[in-house]
Image (cartoon, rainbow, N blue to C red; front, side, top):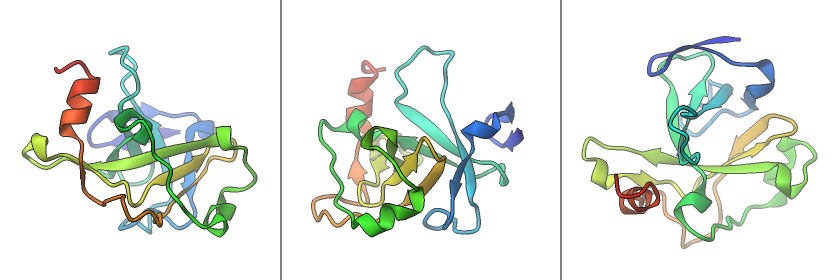
Amino acid sequence: MLIESKFFGNIEVADDKIIHFETGLVGFEDYKDYTILFDTEKGEERSIMWLQCTTKKDLALPVVDPLFLTGEYNPVVEDELLKSLGGFKEEDLLLLVTLTVPSDITQMTANYKAPIVINSSTLKGIQIICENEEYKVKHPVYDIIKARKGGE
């Protein structure tokens, strides 16, 4: 499948790399299909990735594995919310959090309150609101990412 992306140009993506979100994402409920893009040329650990919509070229959300940012992340959710992902083993799940990157990059935040959960075997995803009170919608992460990437 050829995907047009405002930020990355035209990209050929295999059908088995398309993730379907039955209910869309928070704020983007009408857009259901996405793929994950990351820079393989830099040889970097997959820190910041992009959740690129397959049908709206200017919809690409920066995402990151929350464990890249913190040693422990364990969102509490009702099992009922995960049923739409189909049957899964824990190792099939990919957990991501969205990043907000304002013009002052030092104010970058991660949304720990509403993680994205993807079942890698069924290619189904969902964005959930976790019950953990300690997780914030705007958790500052600039210094953490800078340190993880070697202080670039």
